[in-house]
Amino acid sequence: MRQLHPKAFWLFFLQKTAGLVFLFFFISLPFLISFGVFNYQDEVVRRDYPRYNQVEREPYIPTIFKVFSLIPVGFTVLTLLFVVIIFIWSKLFYNSYKFEISKKGLKIEKGVIWKRYITIPYDRIQNVDILRGVFDRLLGLSDLQVQTAGYSGAVLTEGRLPGLHPVDAEKLRDDLVDKIGKGQGL
Image 1 (cartoon, rainbow, N blue to C red):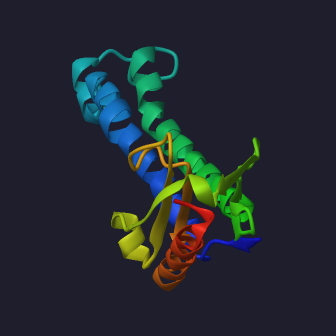
Image 2: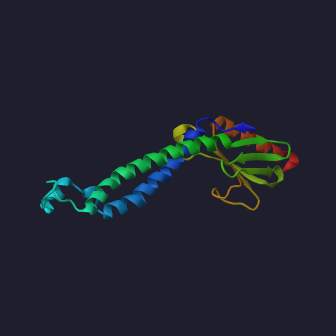
Image 3: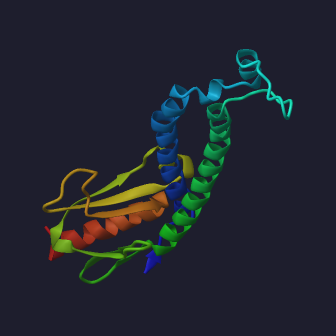
């Protein structure tokens, strides 16, 4: 069994981190702004609430502002925790992704918690594409997609090998097309 290019780890990390950024900017950030978390300032609270606690001689700050002042810190810690989890998950996912060209077909093994073993017989292969997305181009990688009968489109490819070196992707595509062309496939 062969493994993906070592830069594929960074590909997985960037893809998952982009999902986290999307989650932050389009879901969490508007929620936090709507509560005025980023507009909170000590001066505003002191100006609006000039009453003092008689025992401790500290400015009176309502509990709601104390809670909201901790949200950015908690959110930052939570974001850093998610980045560390994504880093570890990407490493585990990269280590679990293997493939092989056998006599019967293309074998793909992947998964961290749930392992998935895919064997695509050569007679079911309809098309072999090489795609290069934004992150692929940044890292100098390619994505080999094997389309079969019954599956269609880039999203529904049955066999996908992300994070291959472009030369390896071309060679693998040529090997698969040769196997199909020799009467073993369509």
